[in-house]
Length: 393
Image (cartoon, one colour):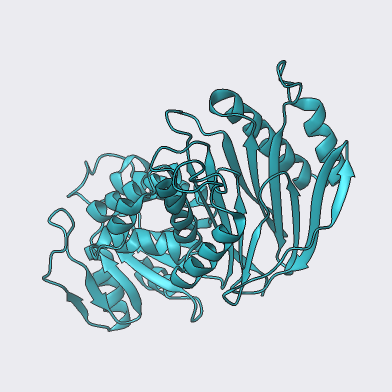
């Protein structure tokens, strides 16, 4: 079984800036996962453009087999030059993790990658090369399950300069804090958020520089099957439930919808028990069914799930308050949390029967509320870098 990664990032904009001067790109191929963090010089619009150009150029060229030399030469020749300083570049870090476990790290002027294995810091050797008068550090190594790799923009090590700390948050201190949080967190987004929150506090909530933490954790494959809506024909009940329940011991299963839950209960002969406890007045209570991790109501719950996933995709909305919402015990939060933190691939099993309670039976299925929710769910989960497949019944 190949390597599976959980990747996420969190950025803080420089105080009073609308755009972030850092840019993170996650790219996937059949052979590898690629994470690029570019930090444009300065801040605001200009830095955002420089960082975006850098990350896009590097990502496109790397995926098309370009050498590091070709990538750096293209960056040098493409980016506009500042008329004042006569330099205009974006610093960058590139991390590529192959399914085989091989990894490749390239760093140019960003703080060094933090590499954590088994709860300890692993030093990254300096293997420098000079390309177009730029000093590049290059490192090839192997990763294993449990490893965490953290890319930083220099806003992290500048946190607190001249305020709470004379010389900022030194790399060694950031790394030590990262190791501590690694032991306390299970997902890439929790680790990235913990580090940026600490930076924000050191900046006294007025960041003096764009600050970004991008995390890649090496994890087990975590497939999730989600079933919603009854099939168009009752003859398909058996095959739909059979497909939904397929998979191995690593597969987690969610049913969204009362009718769907009753179908699974009937076809498996397992008892469906509905909780009477309302954790949220706007979200119907969850239920329990042996063999299924989570059973919830349908449309209202999926609406809440989508709201939480869209906030996650926006990145800036992922705050401590967001995690408090994600940790709540209502159906919407529980489903969203599983899709964000405990899922590497999502398989959707969608029934096409018309539910007259939610829509005009005269409308075709693709105009229905459930179909719209499914389409948005697929898009949001794909934006999180996870593979999504849909089977209709």
